[in-house]
Length: 183
Image (cartoon, rainbow, N blue to C red; front, side, top):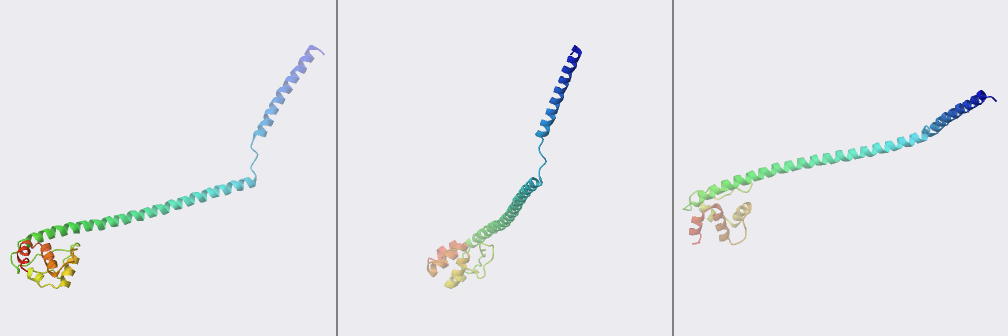
């Protein structure tokens, strides 16, 4: 073999080596690629995605229910606060009106002077409120009990003690201290 022949063989071996190396990279790349998923794998993956969607839907429904419950609670709180505000306003109006009535009634010096009626805790005028001191003196025990209960006052004691309690509650301190001690 001549030198040129040996060089040709060496060159051919080099070329074959390079080609083999390139071919080996291609074949390993082919082996490295993921095989196409099978239909069974795709169905399993779809079932898993469906379960995740259903779970998220349930979570969404639970959140919506919680939100509806929260809205209901807020509405209830607002309603309660409005009722409380009305109660507070009525209480303040009642206290103010009753303080004024007691002040006027405290100047009562005889049994026939008309009394300024007091309001009940709900700012209502009581039917059967005694129009003067004589009316308190002539009230029956049942009438006294009704009025004392409506004002939230103690209902125990003798008939005399109940009359005195009502008279003092209406503001008639001068008359009750003077007149009722004689009874």
